Image (cartoon, rainbow, N blue to C red; front, side, top):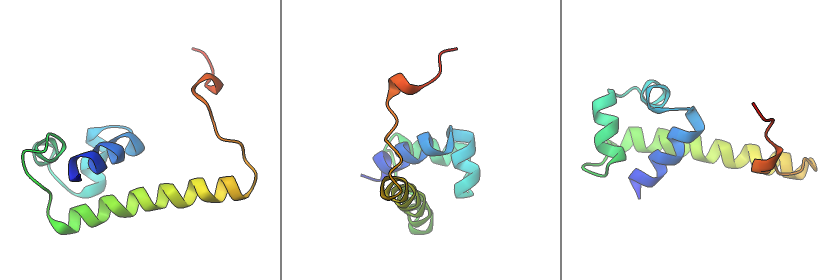
Length: 78
């Protein structure tokens, strides 16, 4: 479960380097957690959960404001 949450956080932060910096962790530690070889300390897990909850709140606010959900096909082409 921790690994899955951290994987979602990795996407939200835009990569492993950014997530490691956000969590205040070494990249090698983060890779162990992402690969489910060990679990993060409680403080790191709580920080990751704060990120997930903030994204949930952001999406709920957008929905309440009537902003339509984005689809993958809505992305501009390169």
